[in-house]
Amino acid sequence: MFHADPSPYELELQAVDNCQPGDVLVAAAGGSGRSGIWGELLSTAARNSGCSGALVHGAIRDVRQIREMQFPVFATSTCVYDSMNRQRVIDLDVPVEMKGVVFEPGSLVFCDPDGVVVVPLEVEREAIDRALEKVEAENVTRNEILKGMKAGEAYRKYGVL
Image (cartoon, rainbow, N blue to C red; front, side):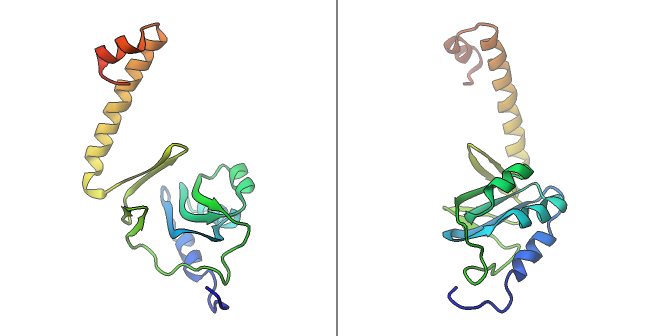
């Protein structure tokens, strides 16, 4: 944006205020670093609604405060400017694409320091079952390695590494 926004934050606030317990708020800002579209106040409001975290394909601000709150926010960059008259939310609860991956409303989203995973609704049960099997197999392998088994032997025996 390059003009005064007559309704700054309107849909942004609606998105945060409509968060439900367990939601991950996904903001597809095209990777823009023009402004920090997410910050401490939105994190506080989202957390108060029971939101589990936020994923922003764009910039955020107030990183220190968000970390102190221990509210999980994953973003592509940071920017000290807020979004007023720079960027605005244009739609809510619609499919969005980030780096070639489509996020549908209601999809499972997992974020951690290793990356982001989105699980489409149509394969949710299968994905969860397979992930639990993998975790169990890795736990068995880790326990054997902790007991002294060599990594190669553990892999040959359990097929997981």
